[in-house]
Amino acid sequence: MPKGYWIARIDVTDTEIYQGYRVAAKEALKKYGGRFLVRGGEVLASEGAHRSRLIVVEFPTIEQAKLCFDSPEYAVAKAIRLKSATCDFAVVTGYDGEQPDGST
Image 1 (tube, helix red, strand yellow):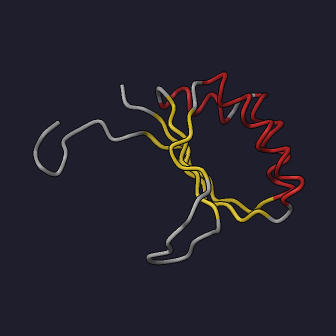
Image 2 (cartoon, helix red, strand yellow):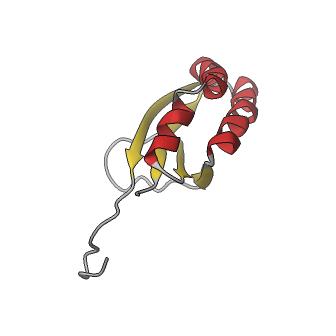
Image 3 (cartoon, one colour):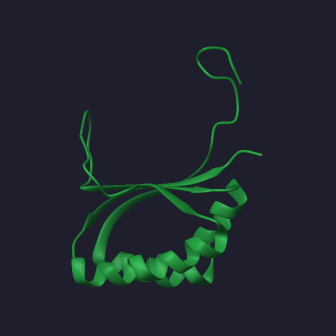
């Protein structure tokens, strides 16, 4: 079964309030098996529009990623994020098929 991912592009508008989001989101991610692959760091805007922060969170399955996003635990974090950041957010299924070199 393919993994699930959260991919978000974020512009933090209030760093003080956003710290509360980070704390609240941590609990939801822990409960549903999420782990950060990308969390902030330098963003090289190679093409198109971008935001100042990029996150990628990996979950064991797409179901876990969806459950976490829709969970009561994450709802608390999301409410804080909406007050402190502008965000483009996607929950996506990981690729579980053939690679460009023909391998699987």
